[in-house]
Image 1 (cartoon, rainbow, N blue to C red):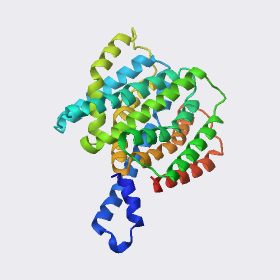
Image 2: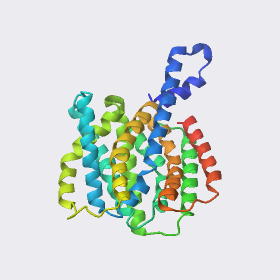
Image 3: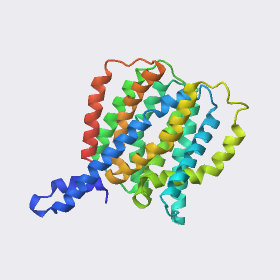
Image 4: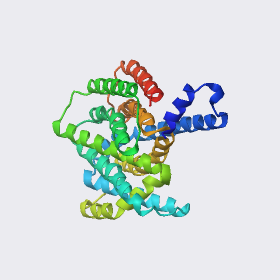
Length: 312
């Protein structure tokens, strides 16, 4: 049973019928899941601005493959250091889906998109991630949100998309199509990873997915490697480091743990806050302006997140 649903159900049971120890444990798990999920969102918020900077000096295919190779090397160290058992054969298919969605699909598609659109414009589509994650959570993870959950999700996503669209006058059909595909791939990877996290653990899932994708990514990195890396700006190197270490590995440690403890559909709504964090970082890194209306919309989105959590 989904933990967040159990927490909501416990609130509806008369006090005398509740098991205090169990209720406290469920409550702690719920809050811990949402806290971990929020940390993951904060880390992921820098991914698109950093990718935008990185593609200024590196080709999308090389950037995607080399960041996966770097992250896989770190993952191997972690798995070896903590002596983690190999996943069972039944987990390989799911790990393949995770790798396809978040190790290959989302990084590559967003890198391609950011060649045609600005970081602010790309952030529009991140507002659709909660719906994609929740939808795949229903299909792959067995989550069963209530009707009001979807109402709050649609309202929050609509607010994010409507606001972000006003932040950029530039548009590209090709870039938009890449971002839509990226959202679908990421939503699938998130939902599948959340299911695996309940068996393997949050950080173990992304580590094994990176290891699984390593041979293919190593080949791509070799084939697409530029003739020289000399002359790259320090900002490109820093961005590559960020998307390799934090976006590709550290963020998922917190994110998958949050999804596993708090429920894919419920904690997934924290992604509604990611565009606003991303816009702030885009303004800081890329000098893109932020509209004053952002504060009001952010408050509305927080309300939607709270509502979605309540009915997840």
